[in-house]
Image (tube, rainbow, N blue to C red; front, side, top):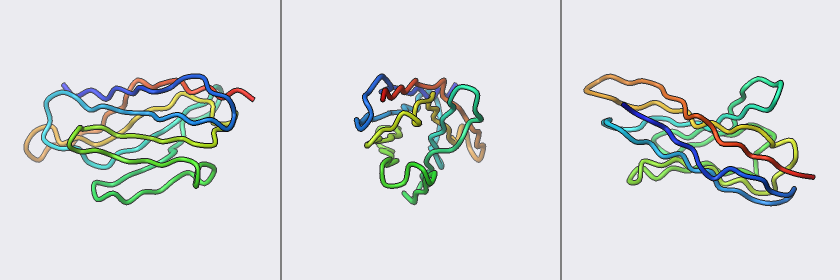
Length: 120
């Protein structure tokens, strides 16, 4: 059973920084493309950042220049460095990705989320 577990959320003042982590655990062969999503109260879930297995990235326009997604495949961990946080970044942040479970089989998984709250 594969699990994605986020950590690193919390309460921070506007302008501050947080680093989110997403650890992939369980029985699997390899990790594919990974994303960070977020969902604010009353809003739809949106993709914040994407990283491929080769390290190519793209970002939601509103976080470009402030957030950085990265991965450490040796540690099976995904990161999101968030700088210059704004109150509008307040949301539950979710890790999402594709994992090769056995042989040629790939499956997508969601983490349970970590709360990020930015005070003004």
